[in-house]
Length: 241
Image (cartoon, rainbow, N blue to C red; front, side, top):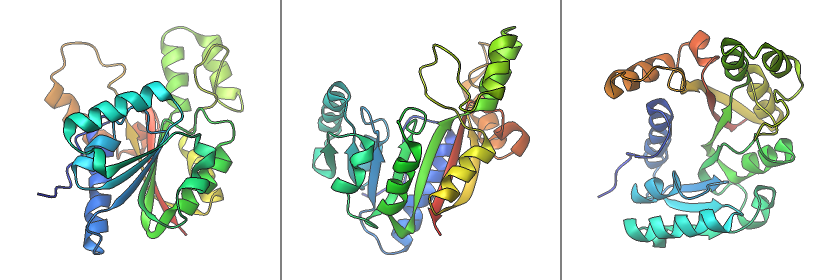
């Protein structure tokens, strides 16, 4: 039985937005929505999407991650709905037909690629006219705030003023704020229709907080601009203009 429930990692707000895209695709008459997960890793999103009845293509160069993905897909009985492409994200256009995807995911990707503009152009080319691109990125403002509150003022200053929002030793090449993410998507010919926060307080809340209360708060806070802009991650849904 088909379902639009995607029981994957990420906040309730992210899942809610992606499930809405599945419903929209099916409302357009798409029986098996086509999902392309670029930099999909070990299948944290791909396997749940396949379980929800989607046809999923994962573009991922890491062989260890792909081994985990294949194992998880077999355990869930969805291997037949997942296509694996062992290649870098900038090769997306060579493997995925332009305009063929109902939903394209780039979660935790733009922070680590050499040229995010090249990747964004490829994402925009892959999505269908009625489909959507989902982007999840590390938030520069949150990193500045967390370092400052921890007393690491010099690092916070560097994160705030540096062109890419990183300091020496970071595991990412860049971070984004709301304006920067929006500008990057628009420059790739995409229109941002949703911008929300992910992990607004989850990374800093003390222990002992009830999970249901935290989940409810995160879902509500994700859409409040002032709270969104200090969330650990920013999530955008964008469409071809």
